[in-house]
Length: 440
Image (tube, rainbow, N blue to C red; front, side):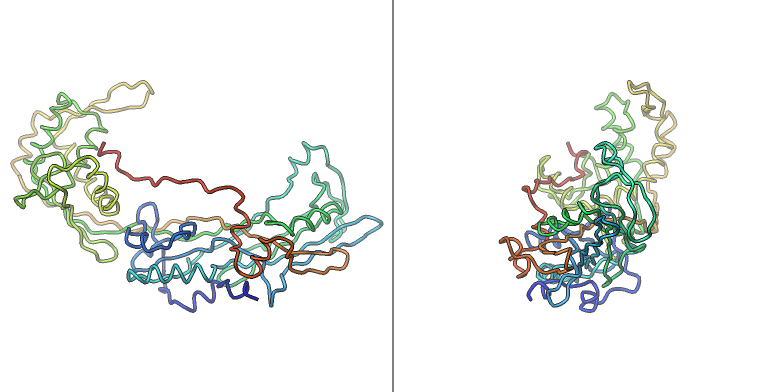
């Protein structure tokens, strides 16, 4: 039974590769996987949630889907019909196993190990489940409300669905290697419906919500600034705007000023075109030492700058965060700001040079330090559970694999990934977002 062998449970995955005792993934919005790792991930596997470790060279992977648990090919699902006082009811029990497809895991492992990284399951903090059923409001609109007797509790309950009387989920979701149990109490129509639904691609619409910790970057930065050069560079920039800059233009100036490109003679100039007035060196939480000095082609173009932003996105974000205090200090010492009206009634500010700014240029060279501690937040991901290709007989309680379609034959042979049973439409192309707007 190949399908059994093609699923690698989280417990088995954990035993194959060790994880740190306090493993915390990095927040993907501020600390994404580096380009060399992304390039090493085989085609077709980008649908997995992949996160980097906050400190180590580890890629965390979350299951892409959950499937019905099974043993020796027998699905962990039961559907039985009962009769009480001439009324048909049904009870459906199912257990889901959230796992990483073994073939996909092997390809991921080989890919990331080729660039010197390891792979591990995401350490979930907690999980919970939700079922998508014919709801009370939907039933009310359809005019199918009524009172029924719950065959389990014996209580009379009002329902507005002609399929499901009640659903029960495990109060807590599974941790690594555990199964997730679901129970539905069905009407007679529900029994007939679910016998048909389970043959198809997704008989039970079930999602697992999984929560994990995500850590923000931490670093220690040293900022050497020449206030005279910085002032001269800003003066040249402000002249383009008639010496009266909006707050967004001041922010744009500092984003460019904090990045320096090497010239053919070996010296550096800021992306604003003047001498490099700000030099940043920092060490992140992984012990990597970086600087704000970059190489660009001579007479570089806007496209070259966009490629720089894409290639060094993580480093540039560190640098811009590190100089935030410097920007505020420069505004306080060198500029005068006053509010200006805007059509949307938000308060904007214009900046002009202070009359006494020259006294701050006397202390030409200043060194600043900044340290940040990488706090962690809770984030979540949704993992669908798939109950597919199961043939049931509610009268006898018999459950067996359904092989009436090519897709189901491939599924039970381990040749058709379960996720494909849900893919009824072509995937949309998602364009990668890059923070290069300030280069345009």
